[in-house]
Image 1 (cartoon, rainbow, N blue to C red):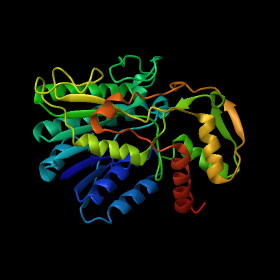
Image 2: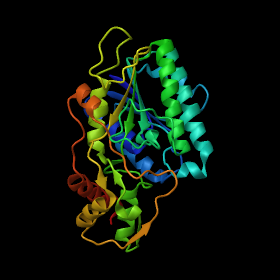
Image 3: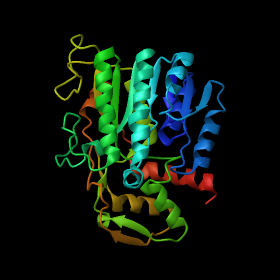
Length: 336
């Protein structure tokens, strides 16, 4: 296949692109190399991908008018996986315009490009943050997402809504997936695991929100990539042409559109994650308790029924395996 991956120098985009290339697919990777976090890390990821002759890197911003349309006309991808976005829950309090530019206008440019250049399947990255103030657990895809707590979450919900409208109007097979706290080698420096590792190795204290009682549905990156690859092979059918896979299916009645959680359904307390990190590093952390920041939630927990029905499995790598793998990469990459 020919696959276009937006955000290919990002954490998940890098791993997905590398997996696709290993399977023999041709990958065009678009990335804007924003300075939200270490650009050198993003360049290093792209350099790894460039070892493959079937990888074609493209540098550019999603929201640049016409860029995506021209790229798709030239590449003619079979599948598009849209991972590029302005990420970060807390950063949306500091720089909200970045979210409007990348997540709203950038996604709009992509939908217009796909409208003009139809594909076999459009896959879109959303977020568990879309569940916002929901208190019913586990988070189910059919739950109403009407109480976002940050502009980041709101921008992703808006992207989902735009995607459904384009899917309905132009019969674009579209799957949107909501990620749950992805971690692993080559991870994002703004995420807790990365921050904690750096500080513990430097002998600095770490800030622990809610006394470590907050829970996250941690998802190891290779499990996530496997789920995306399998979902790519299950494009939603046109309305009226197939039955839902179960009462929990989010298959739209008016569009070839579906929304799917990607998570393991096994929340882990933050203090348990830190315990596993200390064991992997061979060092103890000085923990400073802090209240939960604005926009953060106390617990995330993915319902996995739909993912299980669609691909036959759910993410299963435990933190006792995933965290040592991250630490080994971190030590090798930074010489720590």
